[in-house]
Image (cartoon, rainbow, N blue to C red; front, side, top):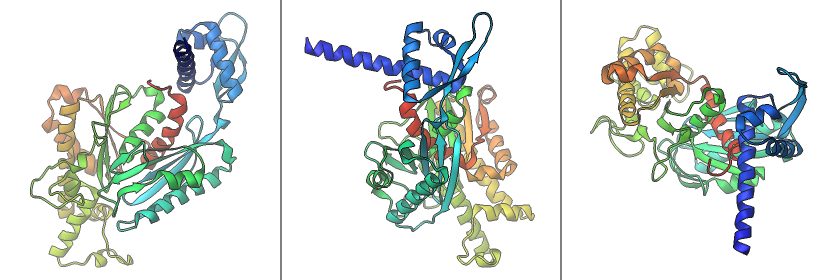
Length: 409
């Protein structure tokens, strides 16, 4: 009897949470709805909607903004999400920088900050800088610490999301089994959630485009490294060990350039921003021109993919070929992924996309060459409009999704 009672109580609590989640998500998509409209859209009965909205008003998650007449009948009270309910912080660790943002309860960005890092930094130094970015953002928001709903953290490579451990990342020095949860929880005194950087960017894409019903797509992050995130039926696909999407470490040129992961001929070693910079350095050596000469005033003498683009603008045909070859290799890898996954959309993001047509023209040409016309015709290829905000917004959405999404949805 006791077991049956507990089960009924548990089922009631879950049902209540499901109904609350349903209402919150409707208000995210169509902010400003009456109880009558919520009843129609949820297909729940009026009494249930009254109880759910009463709870959400009491908690401060939603607010009433007055009455409005819509059609016949008396004016109805209109409800919408309450931005001041709380805020979330998202911190995104990349190969060359850390980006962070704070968002309110609706996902509106309140503040942002960035900090550069470089390969060779000790993991402890990187973590301190990540926490510093988060704290700086919190100060910019000027909100009560008690309003902090949580912190989302995304890091490249393999991640143990439950334990909060950075398992490995090819583009971060000595990044193996790095404990992240304790330092973040100690610093912020709030729940902390973790995921991989490109997957977080995909979450950011879905969160920002909640009205678009973006449910089936492949996101390619074309930056210093190369990553991918797979979304099917509105859900991230992780794979058996949680490493689905590591397209940058698939082999495209057996026996080719050595990747930081230790293999040869990885896509990342052949066509990433890091690879383009490396091939440019090799080109300079062949020309017997030092990278320092090419980068006057830069003490390290290191070059980047941006320098290749600068040289292309100056008419350097060798650099144009170098960049075009990388773009075609990325296009071929994308075509392979499209043939395997058959997504509705292919979304490109990352620093290399700032090259515009220099990247997109050879990339699209390769897609046309590798994919059958009927497949390409139904594939939506686009550039993410979020820019550098994608990763940190996705990290922040790790927090908000804990509230918006009931277990099992």
